[in-house]
Length: 332
Length: 247
Image (cartoon, each protein chain N blue to C red):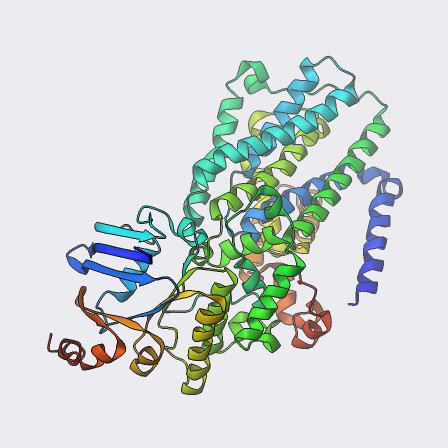
């Protein structure tokens, strides 16, 4: 595809995304969750795909974000919108701080050790939250209701999540095409070599987790309000649902690519909804089978599979590379 | 005292195997120094000790007058002391230019520079150095698709990209065909003369090292056996014995 065609497709996609809630009013909440899934997959892929550090702890920042925002909304006494946006900012800030502190503790670990280390985070978060009275302990916390009428609330969250997903995508695209992207790819491919060339590997790893936590924190803050009730184990620190899904979606679409997680999130979310509708009672079995099929037949994800099959379409063939010119450093 | 690198009484054992015993040597600034020895004599171990890959058991390693034996690999690299690997290590899934850009000097890295793009100057630099090693035409090829010899050249270019003061080369000509070897020797010399990089080279190819180095150290069984000019080394009976297995 030429640049022109890609641009046209992007514009069509954007128009569709903006128009969707008006064309499909019955599905607004589902579509809002779709953007949340895209956010999950994109942010997980920073660590798991681009850097090769499988993190099972990202859900921790989601929970932190959800609680921080809800507490600010509950206790600040400000107007709903003001409190909510302060809450979002605080969730982002606290997510980043938590990632920096935890990261400097466990990101000195290599690959699989980090994965195990991060696994405990979400579980610990859930346990702490369900024992802490100030944030509602086991009975959870309900953020204050959106002040507008019912339809307005749904549209508000739809466009909020759409905007977040787009901002996240554009930010990552920009970061991946610069020093950051190259450095974390280098860490994934050969961390010893990266160190031997003087790369600040631990610093890059911590920054990568902070970028991840920034967006996951905001997503958590907004999702707490979208869902309307923050349960410590099933919503905030939902390791077995959101926590696992973010990994699956990135792998399904093709980890280590920019569009893979977006694609994976869309397919996963739609498939999951169809399973719930048409295979009720068996939806988890179907989901499990889907995962097995993905891993067996598409180990590099859908986008990875397409890239291997049609390299020329992705500019990987020699000719396309020459055309691309010298001044452009290609992004994946 | 003007030596760029000063190794004093360095010992390193792996369990019961003594890989390096009380090794002392020095690399003066601007020189090309050779390190030879039969297989298993501890050459690569010494390199790994110098760049901080593993702690040493005894002795001291001073670089620019500063003790570096307790620093980590990346910290030492940022001081301008770099190594290449015997088994080349390049990023096979990336093209040559990207490989080069990973290796920009990382001495002063701030949060802003981490999140920004490469400057046009850096990209120019990368292409100029690829030109220098003769890989300019292949700059957008995946590094993994290059031949082994070309990968070695790429690794050498990556090291130059980092603007080191001292470069430790572990068998730069191993596995390279004779024609390419001459080109490589020429480039090593030019890097030394034109860019001013001090070189410390492990080499098995005697013709290469005799041509290249002005001073050679010879290790055998983890000990420093002899050192001197190429001519002295060539005529040293102990060195000859070591290579023939008499030691």
